[in-house]
Structures are given as C-alpha cells and as structure tokens.
Image (cartoon, rainbow, N blue to C red; front, side, top):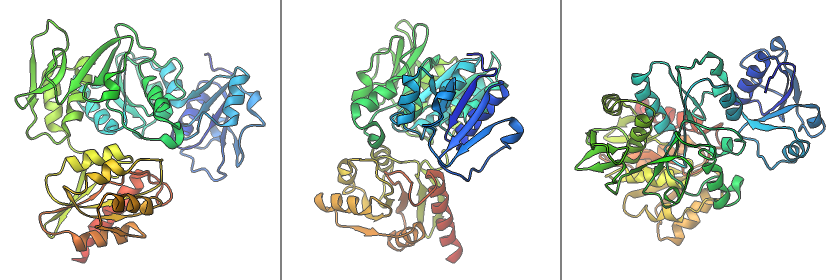
Length: 447
C-alpha cells in the first residue's frame, strides 16, 4: 500500500500504537489516533506530526471513514468495530503486520507460550556477532514500527511475536520462524486451545521454501504442526537425526541429513534453560550464524530482566524475580530449574488458567506459597484440593516479600513466579518485577 494521503485509524495508544501512528504519519498518511483513555502519555507531540486524536470513546461511529485500521495487540479482534471494518472491506492490521510490509531485510520471528523474550534476546545477541546490523524488536518492548525506517537490506530483524499480534497477521512471512512450545494461556482472549494454537501457527502460515520453521520436538502440540517450509526440530529429550539436540552434555546440531554433526558447546555453565538454549541455537544457525558465534553467544548470555533474574542474597537466602512467568507453563518451568527449597510468591489477574498441574508440583519443592492478587483465593482452593496446606495471603507485594523473608531459611530461595498476569495490582509484569525488586532490596537495607 502507498500510504501517501491514505486515511489511517490507529487504535490503542500504548507503545506500539504510538509507534504505528508516527510511522504512518511519516509515510504521508492522514492519521487519526484513537484510545478509550483520555489522558495519553505521548512519547512525541501528535499535533506536530499532523496526527488527529479521537479519545475517550470507541471508534464505531467513524470506522467507515478510513482506508486502513491498525489495532494494538491489547485490542481484541472480536470487538464490533473490527468486524464492521472487515465487513466494509477495510484492512485491519496489527503493528507487526504494518512493520513487516515495510521491512527491507530478513526477519527471524519467535513465538510460543514460554521463553519468547529470553530466546529472542539471546538470538539477537548471537546474530549481532554475525551481523552488527541485527536489531531486536516486537513484543519484547521495542515496536518494530519505531525502527523499520532505519533498517537496510543488510540488516536482520529478530522479533518476538505474541499470539495477539498474530491475530492480525495477513501477509506476515518471516524468513525464519519458531514456535518454542505450547501450553494453555490467554484462553480468556482466545476462548479455547484450538484457537490459541491456530493463532500461534500463523507465524509460519505464509512461509514457503526456502523459509525455515524451528519447532519443539518435545512438545506434543508443536510436534504436530506442519508448516509448508523446511522444519528444523530441537529436542532436549531425543537425539534427532536432523535438528538441534543434547548428546553427552553438549548441544549438537545437524541441520541437513548429509551434514556432519556439529557440537556447539557444553550445557554445563550456561545461564539459560536447556530448551531455550536449543531453540536459540537452531534459530541462529538457520539465520546464518557460525558455530563459533553461537557458542560464544550462549556462554556470554546473562539472564533477561524479570525472567529468573537473581535480585539479591540476604541472610543466606537468594531472591529471584520471575515476574515474566505470566502463565502456568512458565511457572512450572521456573520451579523445575531449582534444586533447593523455595518460598514462592504467586498470583495475579485471571486468564482462565488451570492451576492444578502447577500446584501439584509444589509438594517436591515449595515449602510455602504466598498468594496475591485476584486469583489468590482460587489458587488457595486448588492448594487445598491437592493437599498443599502451606499457603498464606498478602495484600501487597511488600507484605508478600516480608512474609517470604520471615519463612525462608538459609540455603533456600524466595521466588516471585506468579503464573498469572499482572493487571489489577500492577501496570505490567515489568512493574510487578520492579516492585518486587525494590521490596527485596529494602529488606537488605533494613537488616
């Protein structure tokens, strides 16, 4: 689409919406920016960019005035104004679709229920060794629309893509895609697991030869996926004839049947979950990185903020921030990564999750769980139903941290791994993690 003088409506004015509005304005479109809020914290002056605003109300009444509608990931595609636009033949895109159509370079796109941010960050760091013009963007916090005009044909984009962003995918076609894993999540939005899987599968829906899709062989759902392009599997449990796998304590790779096996690096000493390391290795190799780049990147990698991030050691107790664990699958993986007793802080806003598999894992590792947020009573009910009685409630994160500190013994860990979204108590998972961090550091000052 030539955007010059096109009328574009951008709905939702958080980071991605503002970036999309700014980009469309720069491309000559006549932009109207809409949000149900009336007080928008703009990162730029919309008036100076020629952007009109339509605030405090939904766009139903004006939707027919536009040539294009761009919606933020937080806006459901099932809202009436979206259906109305589609019925009128008006394209409805997400910010990622808009950015992709303007992207001049190869794209590595990563989705999945858990591990997206860690793998995206790690792949970006590895590929930066291979190509200094690598950029990391997407759901990771930097909208691709905010940087797409700075890219050139010899750049590489590594993008974290959520299921919400994939709802509006039309022509989105990465050169290399990945679905890291799939467990129930966002069912409050997608309604059922079948729709959630369908949304995730859109990441490779337009891929054809010579595109590549990286999939998790150990996950039953991803193993059943059938992209129309070359598939590169990774597995922590199986030595694959072709793919990336673990053998004798090493990450090994063979991307084609006739390739010699390449041993990348030892698993011991890596600061990353094995599944994530395998996925990142497969993605980086598919995108052209050398074995040496991959090995160096894996060994140099540090934890992503809010993802099993070590905050402090106080009185012989280690405190970890895993606020990014916004679903049950992520929280289970976090517990699996520890070999010592844990005092757990959990709970938040409800996403129609089944907490039973997570709670059932408490008996072997969790000494106490401190519950916060909207789901606290619901999780407590599941604890009782599964014979786990060592739970408490806290009204604030400060209270939760103080209770955890009083319960944890030297040699144990206090882990914030909520298994829930953050809304209601916090702005987002980053805010939740930062509040936890400050509460923990406050303990150190008090003691």
